[in-house]
Image (cartoon, rainbow, N blue to C red; front, top):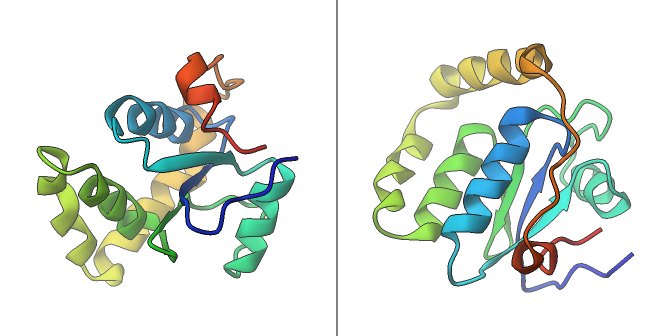
Length: 135
């Protein structure tokens, strides 16, 4: 198990969820600066990060996006990731301004039903992306 660099921005995602692993692959393709490292929620470091931020690692109800040492969950995680990518994706960052009372129920509905769309083993990443996965 590699140690998580303390200054590294991270995306913690459910590696068997079609949506979550798709988000990680999207970020890997569009994060041309290599800003983010990736951690599957099922790994020991992923479980530790869920616990560190007061989340149940067995439920994996949200991705965690850590930017500049701040952990974001649910819609705010998506918004923080888009902002970190820069133009043109940063235009989606205002989604993080939505009140949790509006955005969290929608996010939770999708999260609760995410496996209805299938489960997958995370496909083999490119060598460049593999180097950024912390397991």
